[in-house]
Length: 102
Image 1 (tube, rainbow, N blue to C red):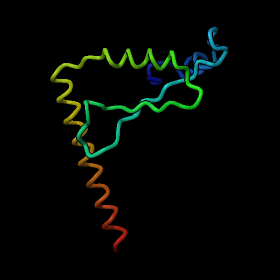
Image 2 (cartoon, rainbow, N blue to C red; image 1 turned 120 degrees about the horizontal axis):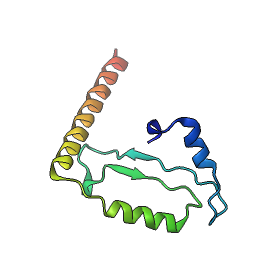
Image 3 (cartoon, rainbow, N blue to C red; image 1 turned 60 degrees about the horizontal axis):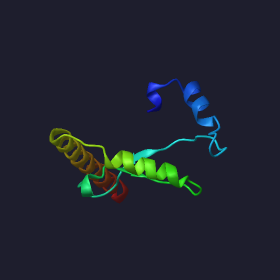
Image 4 (cartoon, rainbow, N blue to C red; image 1 turned 180 degrees about the horizontal axis):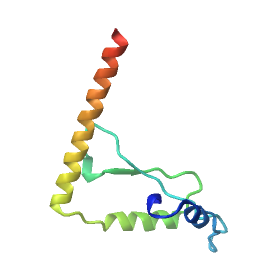
């Protein structure tokens, strides 16, 4: 995460040229999956790939995430937090709807 690294060092790392592709290394953005508050297949994040993404890098990313193992407690906490966030979003949306009706 960028908050672990000073921003100038993060930028410097992203613009370095990858010797195998001749392209800058770039970055990967992980965002929480949207939905009804119930993660499907324990998916908590969505990775969106832009055009021109290196297929070998994609295979490495898939292997990495396929091998990530969460403890039962961690999964339960993640689902609980996701449900709490969904409820909060629903409450906020209801409040906005009430304000627009006035």
